[in-house]
Amino acid sequence: MRIPRIYHPEPLNGQKQCQLSEDATNHVGRVLRMREDDELILFDGSNHIFHARIQHISKKQIEVAIFHQEQDDRESPLPIHLGQVISRGDRMEFTIQKSVELGVTTITPLWSERCGVKLDGERQDKKIQQWQKIAISACEQCGRNVIPEIRPMMKLTTWCQEQDEMLKLNLHPRAKYSLKSLPHVPSAGVRLLIGSEGGLSPEEIAMTEQQGFTEVLLGKRILRTETASLATISALQLLYGDLG
Image (cartoon, rainbow, N blue to C red; front, side, top):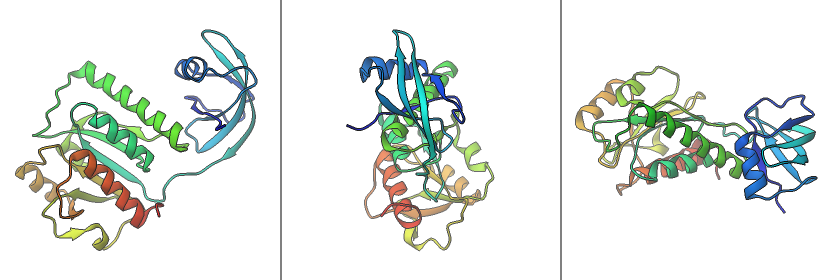
């Protein structure tokens, strides 16, 4: 039987015992129905895992004893910052979940001219919290021990103007370059822009060019926004990361 992996939001280095978070307590006690003396693996985002055993279970809290810790690095050598224009329904959740499994390090939800999603301030905050929980759950499932950051929502133009050492890529069906023909991928990684269902407007495409984005072609077919994200991330990881 596979030992469950549980995220702990506080540092565990040097700890001999701890109390699980409210979310973890609910999952371990009510969903998994684990019992005292059952083992689990905790991780706190530090790229370490902590082997633990349940000591005490009550309705509102679970106490565990940690008996061993070790480094467990499963991060890709290729950092990927995904700038994803927000999609409708559960497509955004699906994109976040699967991109975390594929190794992205950062995700920024973006507003664009053709973005069909409307959220006020309070709903934005709740969405970010919800998406961060999805990222955590994906890490628990896939074995990652570093939690990707879900950044606050921002305008496409603002995100494109951010300065870093990453290679800036914009997926475009009429681009001249393929991923395989990229001249150089820096160690800082890739800043990948994926537009909405309706794509970017001509003005936005021109803006990305001015901000130093390279347009790349994934294939002859036009992909849905969630398919485009995952296909491009997979291809980048295969060519320059740790897939394959």
